[in-house]
Image 1 (tube, rainbow, N blue to C red):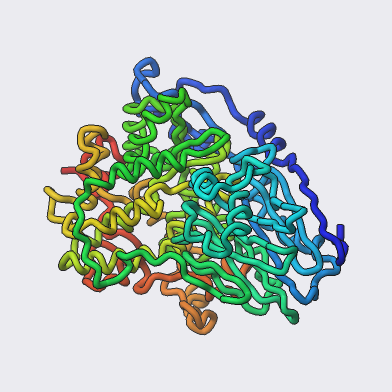
Image 2 (cartoon, rainbow, N blue to C red; image 1 turned 90 degrees about the horizontal axis):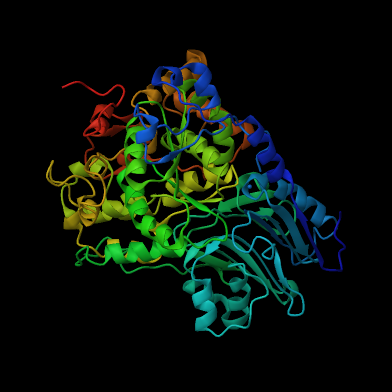
Length: 622
């Protein structure tokens, strides 16, 4: 399938793998059975999946619909991704299509619905597609043959219809939101990037390869890498490191909130007023709910069903409360998903919230043994060895696998803590100025932490995660709020009090006032400790003593960290510079004040996460 060097080629190949997966999974799904709690705790049932029962309540009293799902890993996992090669000298023109299709296939879990390629002697665009908008007509790359413009995009442009109307753009050829990138690039050049509201990484080509622009969204919700080819002048772009790590002499992460052209290099287009340590917010929270509601509405844009990752925490509960009337108005089913161990705070709270909302609720209860078994897969897809991130990604991996069996798109509560100072170490913040400065610090790490986890774990299963709290309008509204509203003052004013107060009376009190838990903590009070015992058993004392010698960059400080590092090196040798590692070994470790909540091994006191919830396994007794 080598591309001719002197002619543009276009081919889109539908993939049958999703259909094959669904046939396979439906064959494995057992019919729902009414079984006692004791039966659900058996190891056999855990391996097969114990999904969607509400506590020990009689079946006839359960308001939320319940279903049993398939817990087995799908035999074929596939992925929306882009791969682009800008090759003005034509060094790779001979055989480029075949090469790029092979490289792009490494990311197929991101786009299981089809593969596409377009290019000529100067460039190539390859795409693995997850069909969400205009499933039949929105195949990529999108090409304007006569005008010689083309685009390859990963993500969603939520305001594409508003932009088409604002600039009076000609009728679109497809229903895909990505087509607006071509229209705007032709209409106004590079400045169009500043107008976009969405999650994206894309490459647009104009004049048949004479012009090119690449861009990444405002805070790196979607990934993008850029590299220089080995022994040639080609420039590569890819959604994931795995696609180009062996094709480039040098690679760098494409910075969030920037675009790039050969003439300008990187240009920062996202520079909000609040992004300065000296900035002092003066607003109250009166605008926050309105702006967040609009963001949720915008992100419900889809031509396929949408679900919600319902952790049982405050943030997803807030999003669920906003979604409910929207779905009722359109008559759509409200589908929610939860992950955890039996008796965990997350599972307990999510069941409460699901029953309260009347959702079609799906659970997966994992064991610590399962968690240990998927570590290699998690690190392969996550492309990191950072321990705090891996711990949170493991349950996220199970959750995404579950949700992908029912929907293609989910909304999440990611990003709220970086806006409202939600992490428990903010209890020790000395003043409001320090809070704002610390929020800026952790916000600018989102692309390597929460966003990376949410994207990689969902797209590892052909699922797209959307994050309404990270809509640029929501970010701006919350960061403009006086940071005094975000200060934690004991029991009367806990973390994220400003957000909780906006939804008081609309969310069950045990969920609304629940103590903040990171995902690795809320899914089970003791499983991280068991995970760490497993990791320590994989590394001998003799090997650990060589950690500093073996790893000059970010040497492991524990056997857990060394085990993760080994697995990373197996797939991404010499790519360790791309891994973000928190100063001090955890998010709180880099704060400018002394932290009493976290160590690099995790939260010091997990028992506090059970506060206000009945029936949490392992909770401390009074």
